[in-house]
Length: 300
Image 1 (cartoon, rainbow, N blue to C red):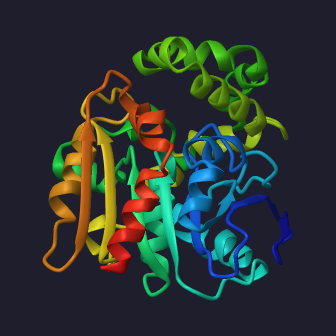
Image 2 (cartoon, helix red, strand yellow):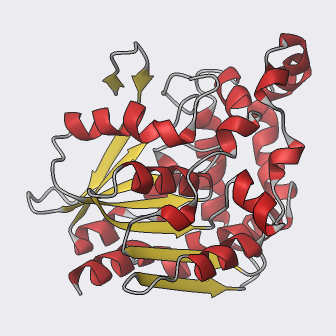
């Protein structure tokens, strides 16, 4: 944990190599999880030790042990939360950033805010900000959630908060039966399913209010820098062609628009019946595929 000057507490976890010359990887989790279990599953410690990487894995506001921050902006998160963590961990060198799902928005924000410090950016199951979706005519879930002005009325949140207070009961049901991918991982990859459920339970350890305000606020979850303005020359993108949670068109847009002359862009896409969770199963996770790719490209 770290106590910020603002008075907020932010939790984070470190694991991987303990060597002095280890590369630093900032791992950014998806929604409904924390910095603890999910990242340590899909970026396993044994693979990171082989790669000589040390991971720093923070939890976002309202997730796990991190204090909530109503109406926050993802674009500001690197400055408010990440930099103090890096200072506490005495990270002065450049580092890699890898984000999964909701973590890709935070990853792009880190790369935008600290371009001179980021050695490489990994985006797994990525999605795009609302502005890009409107411009490109792509699906966005901004129309399915609330605006900040609406969240100012406490009454509108009461039924939602009531539902989330039952989180311990319905989390497993929601993951397994809420979407096609959940049914598949519950059947074919029970270990991944169990990790998601365990971390989802942990994400509510301090109550539901933080995540309700976070996930229902379109100005928070849908706003971060235009990916075309990133000044990172080492980027890896992984997306699934059968993703039903984030449309594959988001990954395809990044594949097209991040391809610049002189940039080392690695893109992989697959369709193995697991949709959004494709890149988190043993086929890809055991060797920390995306971290390995970024490190290899950085050496070239």
